[in-house]
Length: 143
Image (cartoon, rainbow, N blue to C red; front, side, top):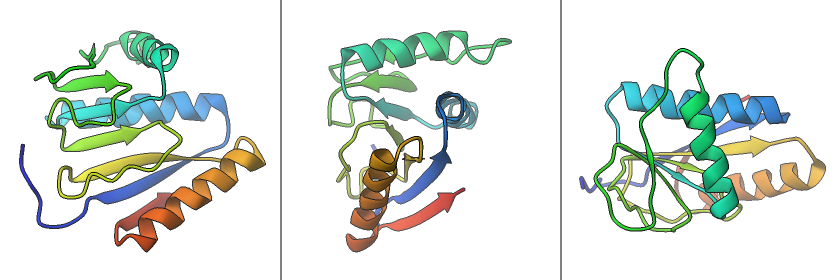
């Protein structure tokens, strides 16, 4: 694992409906897999890990991203986990959990979804962005 001298960049991707969420997840994972990055998708529970697993096997329709569900350290390029640990020494993390992450210097890029599907989720996303800004992360938003 490469240790960086600075905090990772946090990128928020705005999603306004379920289809946009699915597209964002698939696009982020596929782009970083094709670039040769090691990526970890963090999810809140077993049901979510199974859902993301099935999504990545069927999307996009003309290909798939090889990946595993992991709860222990692994060497796979793309892993899905409920753990809060960087199990595959990823340089990129897609956080689908409700809570913020504090993985200073362990990764280069952190993705979060800025969820506007409900006012509660939008408020939660706004609080996450504020947390990262207040803690010295570079925060980018793609709306």
